[in-house]
Length: 300
Image 1 (cartoon, rainbow, N blue to C red):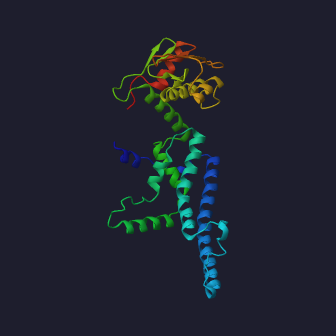
Image 2 (image 1 turned 120 degrees about the vertical axis):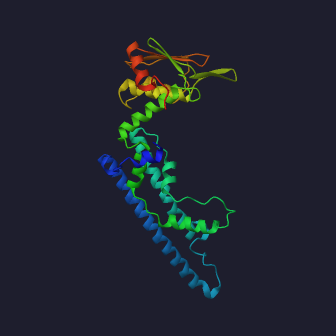
Image 3 (image 1 turned 60 degrees about the horizontal axis):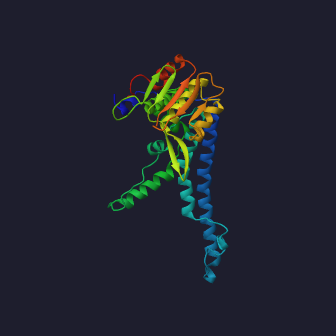
């Protein structure tokens, strides 16, 4: 089944898939977006009328109509600036909604992809014979566009294959862990499980700079550590402080780290040959993490 067929088979009813708090957020931003579009359009009319009044008043003395409205750089307004501000509301509206859901549900949905699907496409070839017509059609489409938050949610749920948002966050997390744990070129595992120790083959490096050395943890290792946090606490929060420090700093001062306060994962040790050993409290915990988060076969 190709991607378009897959999307077409997903029935999306976005308003029934979000919480009341989510709906309140969306409706508040919808109201602000709609009000801003209307207010800026009215401002354009007012501004044109103000400029016309200035032109009429100063016409007998042949003075500039800008002598008072924008004198001394105190006010930066123009018809084009107002229009550009109004056109910019559409991508801002999309970003606000996607940023909210990404933060609330630990998702990694790209707002840019949704903008590409919902916004008119700006012409890019200035040498094209019909570029001027394309540009006029593009700006006219932006001026008439009126997005609704359910359109943004439809795009969001398409990217989660229709999953509930909390479920999609876990799926996304585990997918990142799998891709970090398996080579995309040859499909081989980048890890080895030895009893209660998970060995990551290419996880870190020791950097030397001006006589000082510091450890660097690679992004794929951070992805797996995020999975370990979820495995440890059974959710996305609260993050144990010892794990949070490693994930946020990304460069521990010492090669060995004890994950104090954790009941499933015990410690991590970094090696100069780029290997990292993550030790669990029991073999069962280590095996369960590998099965649920890294998988026993390469990701599709």
